[in-house]
Amino acid sequence: MNELELPIVDLLPDNESAVEQCATLLYEVFMEHHPAAWPNMESARLEVEEFFAEGRISRIAVDGDGTVIGWVGAIRAYDGFAWELHPLVVRPERQRRGLGRRLVSDIEDRVRERGGVTIWLGTDDENNQTTLGGIELYDDVFGHLGRIRNLNGHPYEFYRKVGFTIVGVLPDANGLGKPDIFMAKRVG
Image 1 (cartoon, rainbow, N blue to C red):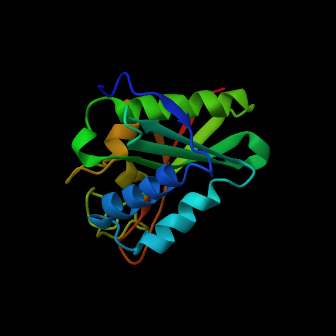
Image 2: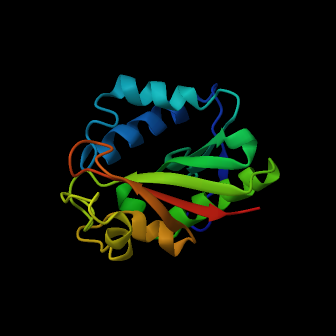
Image 3: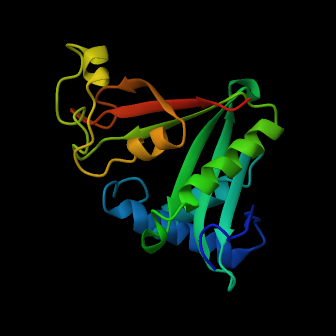
């Protein structure tokens, strides 16, 4: 089954196999560029379990044999007018085939159904993957934002392709020279 045909369904707490697969995806996929995000399987499992709380949306794309190929979530904020897109993860061997775009579109639909108007996200640059990483941003924050370039596969370009706009940056959010880039999109 190709990525454009995969069903996208709710991640349910009683689907223990899918929960474990989502935790494994977080741990393994983020290990390369963000090893501190989920430094072990236990922290990744806890992250997945948090998505069964009220005010969260959790959706998975599954293959015909029940393998989780991708996971997307959203967290209610600002009285439900804005939702944070977090996380978005797709198996590396299945990336760049349209599934990430489908997962984002699906979460947009779910947020819209709940009365949301905006989806926002933070996309860290902890490894100098953009021209915002590893430099002093405070001297000209808006100038640096206006000149941002992707140096090494940073996901902000993917989010731009699916309609998000850079709306800000928090310099040094993850340590000196390691900013968090904020992006948002109107969906309502």
